[in-house]
Amino acid sequence: MAIALDLIDTTIVNVALPVLQTELDASKAALQWVAAAYTLTFALSLITVGRIGDMLGRKRMISIGIVSFVVASLLCGVAQSTEMLIAARVLQGLGGAVVMTQGLSVFQVAFPPKERAAVFGMFGALSGIAAMLGPVLGGVLVDADLFGWSWRPIFLVNVPVGLLALIGVAAYVRESRSPNVQRLDLVGVGLVTLALLSLLYPLVQGAEAGWPAWTFVAMGCSVPLFVAFALYERRKAARDGSALVEPGLFKERPFVAGLLVMLSFFAIIAGLFFPFTLYLQVGLGFSPMAAGLATVPFSFGAMITSSFSAVLAMKAGRKVLSIGMLIMGVGMVALIWTIGHFGADIGGWDLAPALTVLGLGLGFVISPVVDIVLGGVPVEHAGSGSGVLSTADQLGAAAGVAVIGVLFFNLLAGQAVPAADTVVTGLREQLTAAGVAAPAQDTVVGNFRACAREMGEHEDATEPPAVCRSVVPDGAAPPGAEEKVRQAVADASERARKEGYAKATGDVLWYEVGVIGLGFLLTFMLPRQARKPEWEQDDPQETRPEPAAAAGDGRD
Picture 1 (cartoon, one colour):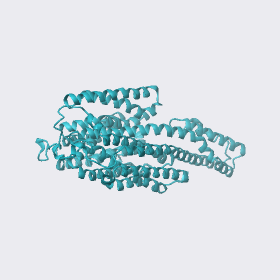
Picture 2 (spheres, one colour; picture 1 turned 135 degrees about the vertical axis):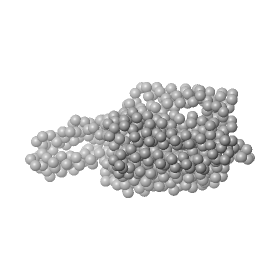
Picture 3 (cartoon, helix red, strand yellow; picture 1 turned 180 degrees about the vertical axis):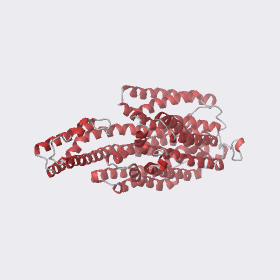
Picture 4 (cartoon, helix red, strand yellow; picture 1 turned 90 degrees about the vertical axis):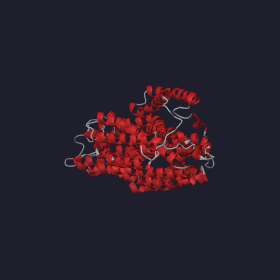
């Protein structure tokens, strides 16, 4: 339940951003920071808070994380300004990072290897349910306008759920900590935070800023920072064994290969839903709730296969992940065909078969790869390993959105005029029916195409350029036919927008097929069969940390 809070929150907020912008009178930059504040804080904190859990106790840390998340959600819900909301989102991101890393490390510590695959299967199913609920729940809450609170319930709903999760942790989770990690590696924290910030901040903010030179300089600086971090951690581990990240983890082939698969996997998922959400809501005009419901088949498919795929991978090994990537590839190609075939007339049910296949493939990957990565981590480093895994997720997602975002908007701009040309014939027919003379039709069509060209180059599609406000000049329509002519132009504009978004989305998803192909190849770096790491070959109980003395009875 605690992890579900974070998983739902990553998708539920985006649904409310348009309403939030209006009611708080937020600028475009401030609105972006409402999302980015959470994402950056979450990603930058994962490794550090994971290690703190190894030191101070995982039950204690997950409880602190839940409390922080609940308090932050309450502050978000009562925020009176964008500044207050952004500050609360920073705290919420920190709490979410604690909950995610400690939740995964509790799974790692509390269950023996034979049971762990089933547990991670449940985690994968939970991820599917949460991803399915987020957009739908967000759309329902915003549309319902409960108590006249508009967007605020999307944050306030976390409060009762978080309190229930806190009670569950207190009742059922036993305390555990690593006996070998006594103090926090502050130099390591500083180095990895700077390295991640140098890489993630440009990826998250670069597109909005227009990719100026500083974004590439910052990303370049992340390379020596990561190298310095790795060298320092090796020395730190050799000197006193209290490195922030245990260097020995990266000597394990399943751990490294699994991280690479996770990077590509989350680049695929984030890279898919960024343009796809814009396609549904901006291109097709779906409401937030309708867009959320349209993606339910994807989450449903993922929920089904993720519930058993980790257990299956224990017997069949990497074949399960390879098959999953192939199924995702088939689903992506089917989605591209569906979008191209139905064009502007597509509906949610038309998308369901392809999205279901995509989700089924996802479920064959997400649960097994989490089990493979964390299954190769000694229990005393469970928090640190969970932090590295979750950080890889965030890096993959940020890179996926950044790259696909640039490609998508370039393709969309290039489709503006061709999409307008596809509806010109129909527009002329409607203008003729309205009695518009041929010379006036030429003027209207010329203005219509000029508007499309300007819209393709315009940064904000919600604020049309000036030429689009005068497509029909005074006197072009016969007396009494003005409204009919304006409606004909509006209908043509809507259809051209749908056609343009459909073509751009279909084209950009071919790049996703390429990334899926890369992910498929990376699965062959994984061991053929699942195996126990060296520290679990004999008696795993010898290295499993005992519950902390102060919590031997299950209480803090």
